[in-house]
Structure formats: structure tokens, C-alpha cells
Length: 120
Image (cartoon, rainbow, N blue to C red):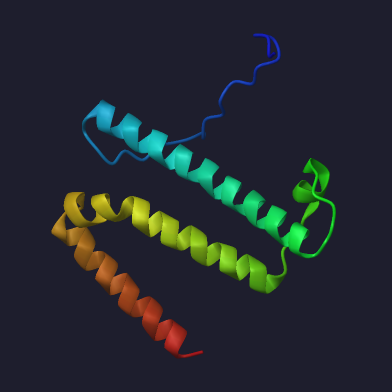
């Protein structure tokens, strides 16, 4: 069991903290959701490593999971999962809370991104 001396304090980013909401409770809830999303993402990557190690008949222990290095294709698949998860979690904010100006700006950025991707 962890004692107060061995417990790590949560780390905070230095510098300006972007605020999305005027209400401190809403801001706190968003921070909590984003922290949980990060934890779920790590868990998904670890589960993926477990599954791939098992499929390959390799030993599954904490060290092998920690040391697992996904191939480029596996990492690309993980990135797609992360993007889908982020879009899903952020959908209510994107669809209901963002001002129209930000939605328009997002469409402009998306058009630029599509143009750049199409040029490759």
C-alpha cells in the first residue's frame, strides 16, 4: 500500500492553461474527461500488445507488454483507433458547444488538409 511519502503528486503542465469554458466546474469536468481518455488510450494500447503477443505465442508479462514495439502498420491502426475515440468523446463539444466561427474555421482547415493530402 502506498504511503503519503511514496505517492506521486499529479503532474501539471507549465505555462498558460487554455480555458474552454467560463464555468470552473465545466472546465474541471472537461479536464477529467480528457485525463480519462488518455488513460483509456493507454489501456487500449496495452490490450493490443497483449493480444498481439498471445497471437504470436510469445510470453505475456508486464515486461513484454511494456517492451512491445508495434510495427508501422500496427501503430497506424492504433492511431486510427485513437482518432475515432477522440472524435467520439469530443462530439458533444464539437456539435453543441463550439461557436459557429470555430466550426467554419475547422471546415477551412479540413479543406486545406484535404488539398495537401490530395497533392501527395
